[in-house]
Length: 445
Ligand code: SAJ
Image (tube, rainbow, N blue to C red; front, side, top):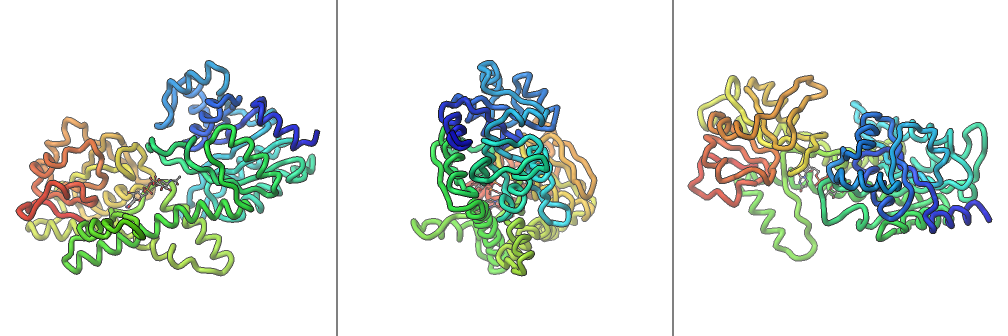
């Protein structure tokens, strides 16, 4: 039996040992879905706090209930370790590590590099490796293949001894309709045999595998998905600025356009672009293209517009205060909602942090409330704030000179907010259904 035949047999009868390198919001749900389908899964993560929490049967990921962790642990199908040496026992490894940006705006490849360096120490004949982290086209071929096929002790032939693929994660935290199991999974490999092996593995747990001809095609497909969103959000953010100059209600315009049943997809303006995907992934592509002496114009322009939205929001708030004979300096501002999108507890890259920093720079006395996020800090401006308690929020609404709705959590009672706020600036049109021409204390983006 060739290494490929032997590995495929173990993947098919689920005796293959599965390693998930990086047990975050992508790795943990992936580990769970493989374990639920009967694979023996080992989560590997250098963060000992995560490992200790997990090994107590407690989940630290919003989308994975602790009951699931405890049950899969008890069944022996899912364990977790901080010891990379356990990779030596693995037959199949998914790399699910972060790919953030450096402060310079360039890709931070350190997590992929360190994970691959560790794996290279333990890689062996008959192993399949799938990179899931969103990255620039060429990463799998230019970084993983050289490091994993020649670690100084052995040389492995990709497609014969070792099978290397890229399969972009499509996890949307908090979403319940599309899950790790039922979201189609793109798979691009270094060779046809690589794709066959990885497809056999993933098809043993996920509903649909979409094969493509190369890792670059898979890497680029992911970037298209999220660049598409980022650029369209940038377009509607610019539309909001144009409509304001025209004296036209951008929300009415977008709703009217969205009545078109074909050839249109609704996006809505907001205070900026948050999250760990949309503001970041496209910059991996524009960075790679710069290295090829090509300027990704749409990405650069959309990024400029989206990055400027917090400043635009504060300028609109200033105008609203001025219309009420007030300044921002020395006055009370209450920010409602700091998560990067509604009804989740994630504040990464949230535009709320920039809005608050800009308000503070104008001398405003800023407080915030968010039902999901008890503390925030600004990594560049080095300030920290704690959320008002839920039972103090409405009193703060009444006392604020302006209430700024940054994230439209479902938990908020918008008619109550309108009733109690002297001036409410709504960046999400959450108040739209509750205001009319006689409403004078609400201004929308
Ligand atoms: N945003 C707008 N206007 C919009 C949509 C989003 O301002 O019309 C803002 C959000 O407030 C947020 C940021 O953009 O600050 C990103 O929002 P998002 O809805 O794209 O949410 P994410 O960042 O969680 O994106 C994820 C992505 N999933 C993966 O990368 C696997 C994305 O591809 C999904 O399309 C998206 O979830 C989703 O549809 O929920």
